[in-house]
Length: 361
Ligand code: GN1
Ligand code: MG
Image (tube, rainbow, N blue to C red; front, top):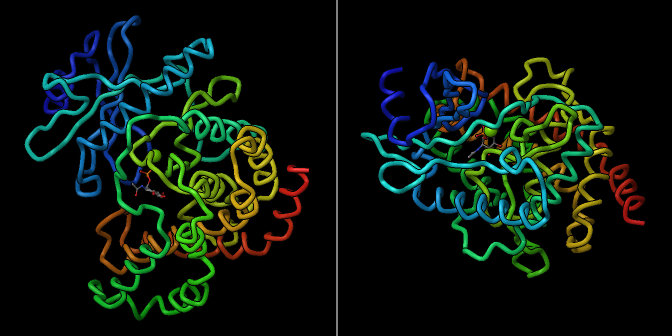
């Protein structure tokens, strides 16, 4: 606590810090809530940035500063109220930057958004709002003038993720390859078809736009009435295909089970959530989406469980070096759950296509 207190002090928060306690369920950074004593002082969120994963912390924070300033300007222009709950605000530290380096670690502090909620699961009504919000988020970011760095280069490049899995198989660092041959065969059998986005991009028909790239349902803040306030966890905001935001939201929100469910009977693709989210997303994004982007939304819904399955499996084979785990076979359990979800999404491809056609008619 004392160590954390002295880090927070470099950011000069208002009020007196009463308590610092762990917050949230992220798999990458370490997150704490900083509670202040005074009723009129805000609370804060303190994060240790995982710089093994985000190697260019300075570039990362510059991205986030550009994006939050841009969104704030847009909201002001639109005459929005309650702006402090609709865009994140990062504090500047003693070094004039929005992060502080202490020994080997990088820290940042943002203002805690009051009276906001996050959820691990959502109903169709909230999914509709989330869809609209992501469409608007992408629309607002269409004209960011500063060039953004790719905070993790080729983050959602399926070809790269498959190469990393194949490298993990060859190295077999943890001696686990023999247990997972069924997953490896199925993944390879569909590899070409799932790399379609990269091919379309090379052919020049699929653009990259600035996307959030980590639209897990628990990265959205909702107000008391279920309206979306803002999207948090901006580390991965970077140029990508719109499939990223659309697909990753559905991967988490339309899963009837948990991302790491041990009971695969719980895991399937919830079409009510799909319909609600898609309707909201198309309402706000149809003005800028190209036909090729709209046509491939069912592919995007399948791509993200597939990609996450590949990423969890690669980490399992590498001996769990990337994602935080709670028990030794956690990454294998996650792989199985994402695999099952992918199978379920594939069964709904035609139905999804028909629904999207209806929305666009
Ligand atoms: C990570 O940071 P967090 O837990 O929101 C990961 C995402 C994965 C997700 C799987 C930088 O997100 O890409 O989809 O876990 N973020 C990074 O739950 O790799
Ligand atoms: Mg998160």
